[in-house]
Image (cartoon, rainbow over all chains, first blue to last red; front, side, top):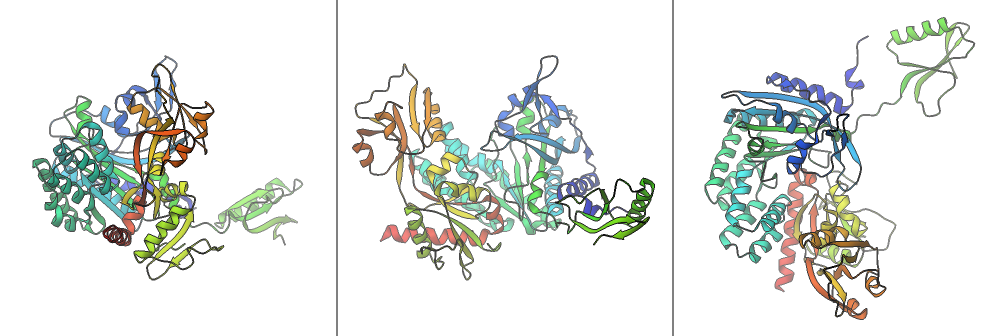
Length: 373
Length: 215
């Protein structure tokens, strides 16, 4: 029987296969990481994963284990440094995370890619292109926001603030909070030029060309200039790929300064009220792991696709087959096979379940399938 | 509620009325908002906005979860809930201070755990954590000033507007934790898809605010 996958699969399940096909077409290989990992890995890199709760348990030999809250660290840890080579992996796995503001954990279905090794500009552009194409697979209307840690970090470092104030500025950048960042600059005696640059950076976002034309209002120092050059290069590639219509530059996308460097991005799909895709370049994490490789990747939270809803079927089943205990089992079995053979779904019950919605209700009368009135 | 509209959560209460007036002055009014009515949603089709009232402490949740695209909420609630939203504008309404207050003449005995009564446990916890002070938080939902009088707490962490309530209960403000006022917030995803409308509202409110200050 031909299978109607469009009807059978949930949004998130269909997305797994669509994205798998996309990543494989770019030569990425599936990486299975397993559900558990040494807790130590997350304890060492707590800020990278960016949330507090990790589900832990002790294994039979006394090691503290964790249910994976993240896939990137597992892949990064197990990849090898090889000059001139880039390892390209994709994954689809479940991760376990604390629900923000609640003591409960949630299983999240996640897919994504990791590109680890001797990265070139091509690899960076390929990953961003794949992020945009992934969003394209998920929903008709999407926005991919691209930022650069060189911009964010470059400016924060120039402000030369104490650590606590720097963290507060980073949080203002993330929340587009220009009024509070200006107040912090003022109370810390930051020069007007730098304070204005910060406000301008927070307030500048939108289509790539629009942002590029206004970047000179806030670019100060070599680090920001380098970042701007990389963003321009990325813009050219995305335009060539025909993807520029739904891509924005937005510097409120900013990761942990100790792990992320280079480009960083976040994707949104219309109808889902938080980001579904996030990723970036994390060479600093690799360095912390004692590795020479560069790395860039992203993850897509497939569980969030539930919010898009699905066309609800009118009926749970085409035919409810009411069967009396005295009916001949062979006759029922044959009748069910024939109905199924005609492409109908059939559920056999003794009495009608109260919540079941069936297109037709039938039963056997003198060996014949008859509609129940 | 219409999808293409910008849905705006207003905080119920006195602050909410001031906030709505600011929207009105900025050109975003909707008939019936200020009237006693059973109606729940108030639309202005021409401006593409839809207002609704929610409990002040719930505004941040409505916006974070995207049920409202934007909303206005006190900085105290934002800090307490840690909502992941854009904070677009300080509307400079309902200005007050989050403060530590204690009975007059109180001396903090650092040999003991400090008992702190508050409705803002997260703010209090963060504040004392920064000071490396060991505290015992007593979470209360109202009449916080009563706690030190009855020996339930040593100090309180609460919003202070004029200080009159503290004074009337024999308390005095000791340390300011943060200044609080109403903030315009936006859902991060809504901001992407309704960027132009949300920007226009923010700019109109901001301009109106400048005019009010200059008057």
